Image 1 (tube, rainbow, N blue to C red):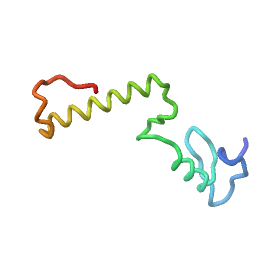
Image 2 (cartoon, rainbow, N blue to C red; image 1 turned 180 degrees about the horizontal axis):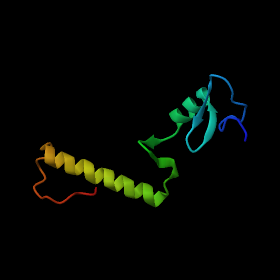
Image 3 (cartoon, helix red, strand yellow; image 1 turned 180 degrees about the vertical axis):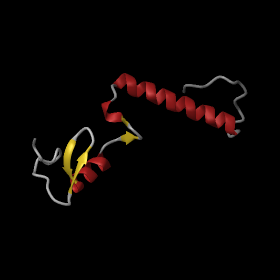
Image 4 (cartoon, one colour; image 1 turned 30 degrees about the vertical axis):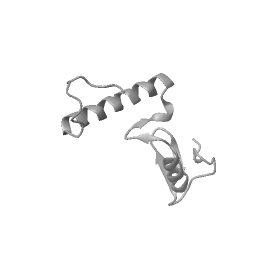
Amino acid sequence: MSLNCVFCKKPVFGVGGLTVPELGPAHKNCYDAYRTMRRTFRTIDITRLSDAELADLKDLVLAEENDRKRHSGSDKSSLNDDIELF
């Protein structure tokens, strides 16, 4: 079993190392940089979504925003109860 960092490929040992679930051993600094650069929300890594899945997610978010605006009363011009997609 290799104890090389999954990000920089250098050996991991001592206090500065940790194990990243589903990835393997890593330096704390390397993992912090990885977390900063990746685009995730909760457990969804949006970089792994296909173009179609990303478009579906965008439509769902826009529909949810429109529905919340309608229910909060901030969008009084809309009188119907249909969820707008755009």
